[in-house]
Structures are given as structure tokens and as C-alpha cells.
Image (cartoon, rainbow, N blue to C red; front, side, top):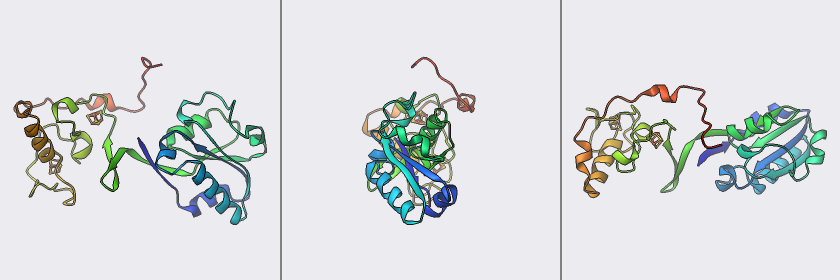
Length: 212
Ligand code: SF4
Ligand code: SF4
């Protein structure tokens, strides 16, 4: 899940002040599931912008923006032409997807935080898309994301009482991995030193065609 949050309202206002604005939410995608880009949030932003004197000419939603290939079927798309700019309530991928299709400027209403999941009462970062997943070796706990040093062999010498030296409010990922492997009867996986990660596979920008 791509975790997003709405930009500070003043920042959004600054982007669109004096313009005719269209707003597009991303229904069925990550932003709507976590209540940052669904119908309700589109209506809320529309009403706040209107209240601040912005001319909102279009406020609608569309299925996942990251899979859009054209504007056909966007509810209310006939009014898109009246907009000077489109504000997108989706992650940065969704914004770029729409920006590649629209003939007018497309601006982000949300900030994209990370790829994560719900954990306890928080949304927590869980994957850096490293391109070479090692979760089968680490009890399903990602050391690349959850260890600030992305260590493939841990813990480091800074661990204290199970907490990470970089942020003592966080559990050390490698203590969690050790405990989980023990529960799974897979501690043997921790006995061999894992080779250094090839970070070249994370070089930007990455491309992938096999899934298309
Ligand atoms: S190892 Fe971690 S960062 Fe890499 S793909 Fe797996 S979950 Fe994502
Ligand atoms: S204490 Fe644990 S999580 Fe923190 S940097 Fe060291 S190995 Fe990584």
C-alpha cells in the first residue's frame, strides 16, 4: 500500500490560487483505502477550496490512477476542459500517470510517504522495493526497510535492550528477525553470512516489462 497524506492546505491553495481547478480522487486505490483520496476527501477539499475563494469546476473520482491509459470514462470529464489545472488526490505515481494524459497542468494534493501497512494504530513503512526480496531468509521481516542501516546481517553493536540505536523508540529489526526465526524453527537461516546487497538493482529510474 502506498501511504499518502494531504499536503498542508496553504500549500495547495498557493498552487491553485486564481485558477479554475479540477480535483480528481483515486477510488479503489491506496489513497481511498486510507482516506486520503476517496470521494469524501475530494468533496472535503473541494468545499475548503471553494470556501477560500477558489473556482472549483470539477471534483470527481476515478479508479486507480496508476493504471489509467486515457480519460475516457472519468465521471464529469466533459468539464475537464474548463479547468486550468487538475489537483490529484493520489500518490506520486497517480499524479504522473494523469500528468502524462492531460493537456493541462496536473498538481499533487497529497504527499507520498512510503510503501507500508497498518500496524497497531499506525501506518508503518515496510518495503523499499529493493528489487531482491530476502523475506524468505528473515522470517517475513524486512531488514532493508526496518533496519535504518539496511543491514543484511545483524544486529549491529548499537542495539540496546532490543531497541535500535538510531531511534530508541523502534525495535531493532534484527532482534525481531531473530525472535521470529526462532519461533519458526528456522534459526539455521541466521547462521550463514549473507553477501552484501547489490544496491545497483535499486538504481533509479528502474524499468520492468515482464508484467505488462
Ligand atoms: S527485502 Fe524488503 S525492501 Fe526488499 S523487496 Fe523484500 S520487503 Fe521490499
Ligand atoms: S540496532 Fe538493529 S535496527 Fe538499529 S541499526 Fe542496528 S541492526 Fe539495524
